[in-house]
Image 1 (spheres, one colour):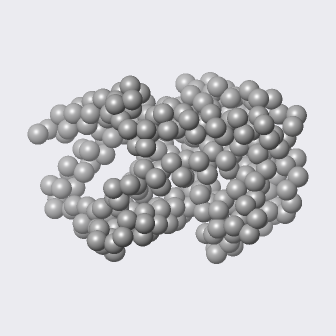
Image 2 (cartoon, one colour; image 1 turned 90 degrees about the horizontal axis):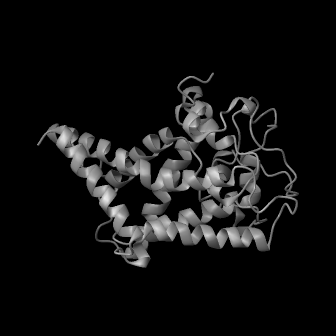
Image 3 (cartoon, rainbow, N blue to C red; image 1 turned 60 degrees about the vertical axis):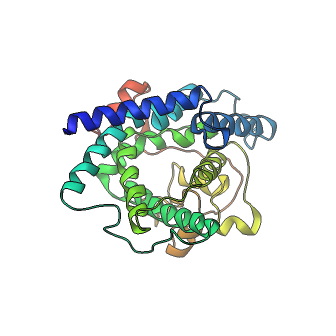
Length: 289
């Protein structure tokens, strides 16, 4: 089978899977499309009911742009990227490199709850490491600027990011699966929906700290400082890089939460140069300085 045929078959298969999600042919418990939609509506209602920054509008600045990004990054672009990675997987298999090649821990025979926990923690650490790289490597920061051009925090801003970040994060999930014996737990959708919910809440206009659990879970107060426009002198690359877990930032000394008023200018120096249209943001990073 040719690479073109593999790409086409996988892309079509992904598109059909998305269609089955939309038409409710996939069970609610595993329905990524309607699961994302329902989670988004619930967190938005919480924003409206318990706003942290009370002056912020319900339909905040760039609300609809960010909402479109959610579906573009999770579904539309996934049609293309799934085809690309199917071709790469085929090429690796021809070189006798398979999902078991890098096995570090084989969790297939472990209790399901432990499988899910190990799967979640390993992937979250790899994502934390990638997020740190997005800030510290200039080439990657150019693409990450799309996410940091948000000027008002809201749940939908969680999934406003450049499509190149999909290209970076997807291999990390594959790496994590390879380290676990090439195995993804059967109920991995539980991890997916949990991380989406926490990510939405981290970006939402809701004041959350989780009390003593703030040292374990990322939260909206901590993540607001990740988006701070003015950075402390010893934090030139930013702080609070955790996606779901905050513990990595406390372990590696990148945590910074001086207060929790919520009155903070967000963005980055030079964000006024960010294009306002989705189409132009798609190519941002390939020409930005």
